[in-house]
Length: 116
Image 1 (cartoon, rainbow, N blue to C red):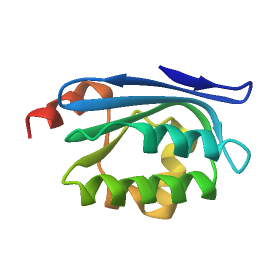
Image 2 (image 1 turned 90 degrees about the horizontal axis):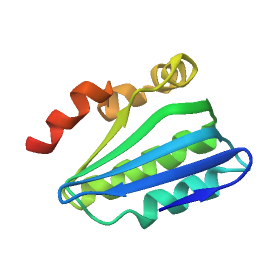
Image 3 (image 1 turned 45 degrees about the vertical axis):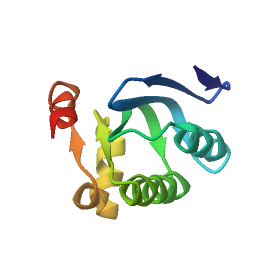
């Protein structure tokens, strides 16, 4: 399952206890609607993992969307985990303080959160 455009696409995988969303491309004002739609379409599970390894750009609109999704998932008793951000995205997460608000993990560690 996923959404696709030339600049951005997203793949969604649903498990019993987690939903994995893999974002690829640029998350900016032009593509944030697709990113938001994918996050909102994710079924409720204890863990929502957002794989950012394929994201080349994360704009302020993308940061706001991640914060809104984090609050939405937390309100349902779940956790949103950011996985494998590249250097550019990791810099944005640090500059905005998002790395203090939600867990940021490498993919080898992210699976351990399912048991938590």
